[in-house]
Length: 295
Image 1 (cartoon, helix red, strand yellow):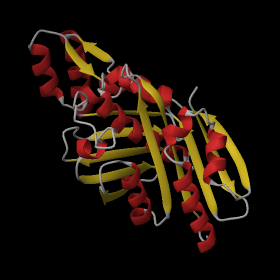
Image 2 (cartoon, one colour):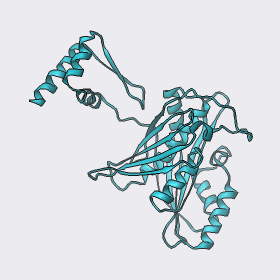
Image 3 (tube, helix red, strand yellow):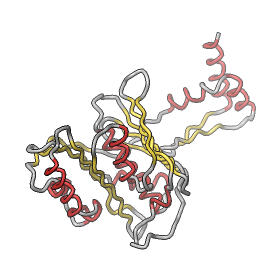
Image 4 (cartoon, one colour):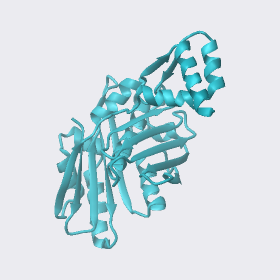
């Protein structure tokens, strides 16, 4: 089962969240039929979105992360609720590129250059939005820049997806370390050394390290205090009511035009691929209902 943990360094101004998202990313792969490169890019974005969603202080809040690069993968969109359950999709799931010289998937080339946008719905009149330029399209470094530039929080982010020989997700996860006001230079230096020594997230997971082990490795030499843990996963909140409201928003004329075509209209959810079908009769009923509301 995928899960997330939170911890702090009790003797330093450092907080960390770590998450395993293997099942979440594998479910996304199965839904969207992604090839390994797209699996890695979407999986990394799902992982950070899950952690950012879990950071929200409001119960019914949500975070949307959009990675809009000029690479062949196209735009990546992921959404998470305040529990850390996430969903997402990307434009071109069948993109395949040669591996990097080090043998790893070339996510940076697949994503390309562009912008990363974070939209937080925390119950205010308007969502809170921040945008930064992509550093290299590898997602983790891009998120690090976002936190520094948009939220003024010095951070270190590690994200990883290990794809097995059968294209399934073998390991996926990440961590986000953030410095709180007053962090000492000596503590920052130690943290940087620990991160370099710990290595890649998926390597640690594949060695059998638990999230607690990983947090202790990143915060080696600090007094680690674990705060909470919670389950996470892939979860879409689409339903027929939401799809119906979206159809009604098209307007009376558009609904009648669709009905006049004389065939079922199918609406597919981008996040989970669930198909909602509406007969011409149902479309005319929606049009009639919308007409009454307009009067």
